[in-house]
Length: 474
Image 1 (tube, rainbow, N blue to C red):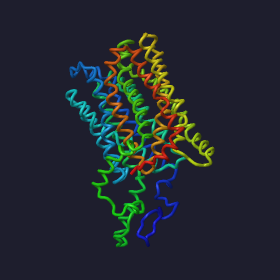
Image 2: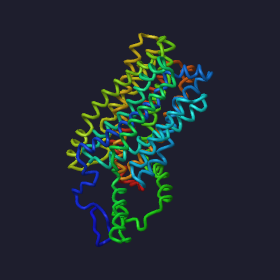
Image 3: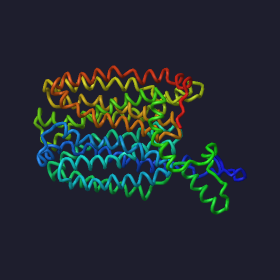
Image 4: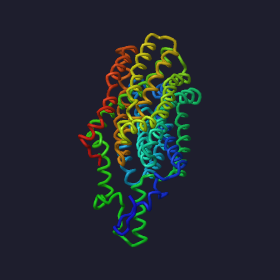
């Protein structure tokens, strides 16, 4: 992708061009990823932070519906499902940073609306809008990893990036419970406003554009004016003839996430599996508080501590994935005569996936029989451990398999998993009421167990299937 002005092509000046994001110094790459990961932590953190204080919100607004209360928490994740469909293709047209910064500002501003909400309906609407803004980092971050890091480092980079969407929803209720109990539920959103404003400002000041296509397009437009050469064109668009208009590119970009998923049975199956597990996380996040305040009679500020089991599981899973992911890929690539296949990312998924059903059987029956409170909390640890081992490899697989369209692929993955995250929790109250905590969680455990072979089958047969039935990603 080098420049050849004689042929009218504008690209990089050399393979070592310092403007190429792949050639950024290591410190700058990790700074960019760290800033994006920071806002990616805060956004899911915001999704669950109000959960322990929902009883205070119900009391102030006179809400008696458990489903409406659950929806007030999970509706934020519904915004995650909508936002990426527009924000991700916009980032591929106008660049990662302008779209990410605008979305972060939008996300931050709606915390004011939530803090001042006069009733439950307005709170739900404001949280949905905040979720739309907060969704940008979830998908654009995947594109940034693809922009900056070579294959050998993407596992570690994605493990760091994936920590936010998993740790955020767990740590949110722990802090939110204390704030709601001591300062009132509205202060939950004022604290979020301050944190989001600080991180958004840091991203605006210190982050840099990483989309190679957009960087070269800006360079081509600059040289067209400086050299009076209107014939110059972006080398990344060289095989596209005339460059599509922004509206045509946006229309194509909005539909691309679903075209990618539904054209590829492999990506669709992984999406549905990951979405179900993600929905289980938010079902737990919206029901754990009621278990510990109702059955174990904990105060709201202490109920948030019940999420520590999942959080500790995530921490152990993060260490395990970070330590083994890239090393496993390097070893499997060497054993495959130096040929890398994206499916190698899924090698460890089967082992991690088994921890999810174990956790639901353990947690469900220990809570159903009202054994000591530490037992169900410990029972949630395998879920956190297993989910990290599922979440990070599958997301890295999407990044590797979809290349320049990684942001769009992650957008489709995010949209569908967040639909599960928004609506699966709504079934929680009625399911537990009908089946009880024991059989209700066992039902979820059996479903998770039945889906466990999915990543293992794709690991074994996915490469051959993908090559035999090649899928156009554009």
